[in-house]
Length: 540
Image (cartoon, rainbow, N blue to C red; front, side, top):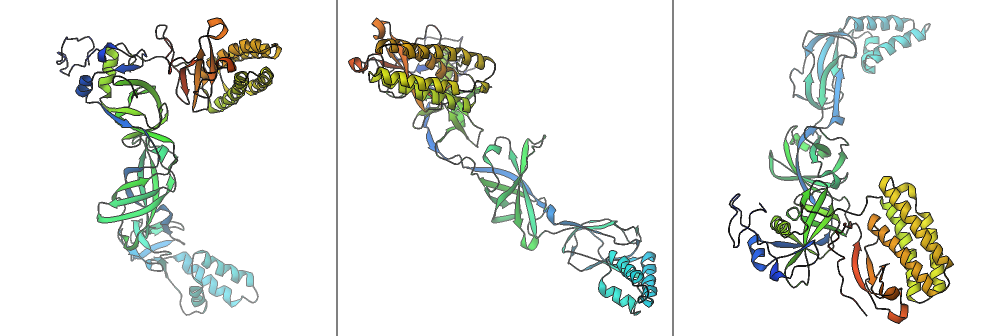
């Protein structure tokens, strides 16, 4: 879009050729909020605007990824020479050959073994006189993995072996042959590497955007290109804590039984992971196409309900990692709201042309980044404040002063070490203001003086709410224009219903909602000419 291009009638941009968006709002009755754009039906049709209803659902979702079959590293083994000698005969002479446990793999001629046999025969003749020498001769042969049956045969004099067989200690596939016939080997020299393919690993690539949703134990369905028409299932048994710097993915491991060795190492697989992470109600999701993102901020356009003309409010939201074609919304939206899922760029361009807030013309956030623990402590403070406010609603000065003591205790319980820098300095300033107002409430004599100090305390509480946020779904900034001789005064309320603490029963419903603060939704700085957004109108 090129906002400098303007024409008195519909047409195309002479620079980029895109359809021009009407710059005027519907009927000239533009919404006073700088975050809300009204559009005509013609403009909506031209922009092909579509909306999506935000719903509560589960974050559990199917993730598709790919991977490979790999040998089970726990089933790998190496067969080594137990004694030095020369390879006289190889019975396994190529990789990939299947062997069974106990099968002869090679014959070794060993002069050292021949000498050890002769030592045993000599020791056997004097074993009654020198039993230790006899035991040592037997032990030497046993250390070379000569079986008891073979030792008994040698000792009986029936057979004096010049070759000894190397036997497989387990079944498997020869993955590496390390010697050739005629080679000399020493004790411990690796001869063959075996791998048992009766079970295999499947290694899946889990990309950075998918990692928050994948956990050990998630069930995975697999299809293998080399085995069409068949599906394999297994849970994730291990998730790699490291990310590959080249692929930007971690690997998830599955263990599969492999009867008949049908699954071959290096086979490609396609996997569907049934994620379980954070599965609970209350998580909202929006389509990928609904989101405008510019580095640090994420923006959506929400359809304003019950408006005279079609209107859309720019809303900053906090989102989680992308999962397929959707994003989880952590804060900023409510279930049932309609967000624009198609035509969002056109609406943003029209908002820019109309001088409204847009992706490139956003208000700065007033709310500071603080920990949830700090917000929870502030919420305890707010609950004590609400008890004070309700005491004034009931025209009970004593109850209000008692509640003021509770506010003071909650204020002292807020841990200032939880905030740093500018947030710490701002909190200390607001705390001092609140303490001064609480001192005035404690010293006040009569209902009206308490209400005067409550007004000062309310200013601090409203600033605390806007600057740091609370762990409550909604609280309300409410205003009575007639308080204190028509000077007007604000207060913070836990309910949308007006219950005036400055007049009590005399004018209980006098006032209006000026702003709604939602959990997790930042409060934006207001420019001098925007004013306060109105609520449902002033009550008397």
